[in-house]
Length: 184
Image (cartoon, rainbow, N blue to C red; front, side, top):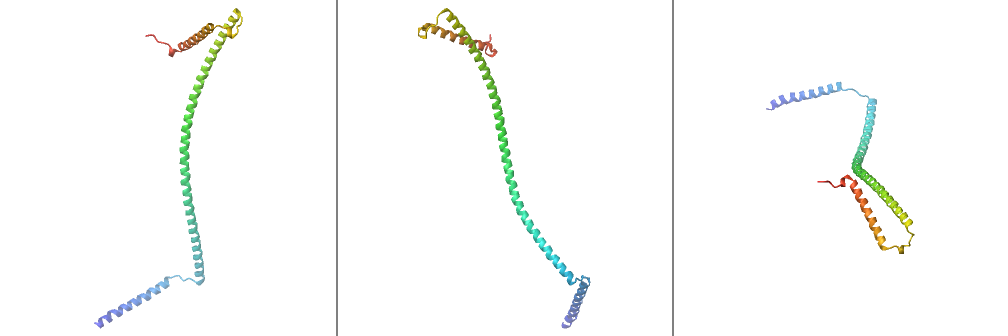
């Protein structure tokens, strides 16, 4: 058995050694030879590239931090813009409501001005009638002191004024077609 081991093992080890030497020689033959000057230049370039790479990485980290800050700022500004839009919509609704109120109040002012003109014309008519009646009374009688005027006369004048006011009011109501009584 020793003989079998020696016969198998020795050629196997020799083949392994020959294969190793041949592969080393082929590797050396195919390998590019680099001089010491080239090696130093390549080492310097490698160090320079590594420092540049490190600078780029630090710049990238700074930019990422800045991007995070800016992203937060953009979110805050977006939220502010949304709240401003909501406020603007509320202000527009309020403006529309106020515009409607303004139009209705202008209409009301127009109605009140018309009513004032009507009351003014009624007041002028009453003043004219009062002056006419004063002139008639002044021409027919002498002017008396207020204490000497009879209470019956004053009551009659008050009734007359009341009657005139009611009559004017009735004429005004009947002049409006909406308030006229309809015949069955």
